Image: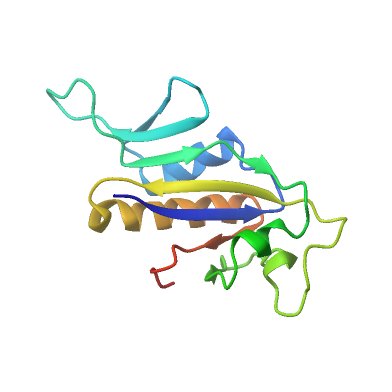
Length: 145
């Protein structure tokens, strides 16, 4: 079972942004890339475990080409703002969509395995990434801020 957080931001969520977020939230973690190089897995190495199970899977960021897509794909989204960062206009009350001049980046963060353990980690990492990329976090449908 997994649960998904989405980071919607004005700046691209680069590897450097993700690494800085991981150092803040999970300094003992490491990254590995899946075979197709489209997903980064976050693992914590354990003594005697050759291939640790990933705790989180982070998809590479994608630039949103159609300004209406975030609202269409995430209707009635539960948006969690990051202190000191404005929520992207796509999710601002009454904005009616993203103005054509606002660039939006989308990144999925999946909590894997035991969600009681990985859910809070995904939430913390998503908020750390959003804070570093001028964004907000779209919480899983059943999660609260």
